[in-house]
Length: 231
Image 1 (tube, rainbow, N blue to C red):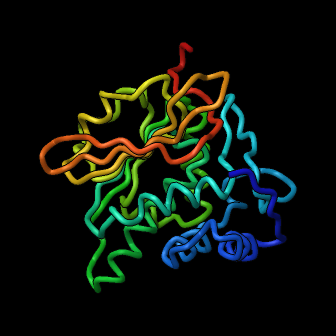
Image 2 (cartoon, rainbow, N blue to C red):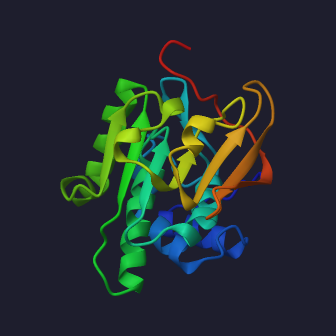
């Protein structure tokens, strides 16, 4: 999925992702156009399709990977969805999920009642993500459409679960069963799985109404490992 698209504007980058076939759904393009990457990474040109360091040994993923996650999860997100975002990092995808809930509500001519819960183990990144989202659109936080909580993402957040969607933004060494327990029937989890020093697989887990979990391997990826503050 390597890409080296670049633009001088957020809208231009999103258009390139559409033209190259990475973004197929109009609703994903709409959400990414609303969520300007310049608010989430401090680099000379934030509109290059590559990951960027955000400190604390963390990165903001490349735009094509954000698009990939939104494309695969948008079909199971609704106006009332509860979403768990593991590894908030910059806060970019957390904001996208909140806007996706809003866009789904607009499609149905109803009010958005869903919420995004983001877990981040680094206190500095919790602060960073909150500041970024406030700079982007303060209402996302003031309206309580999302919450960023400091904690160990490997154990999820039972308090607000179960969830319709779980997105894991760092690589687990094996299938995170603790997170699957917090996934609703009919829900979907997206998680990179594999060694921390090598190539991983982006796995999609769908929990059927029977409780059975079906796993699909979507693509090869390279993510930082899912850890706590001690590792």
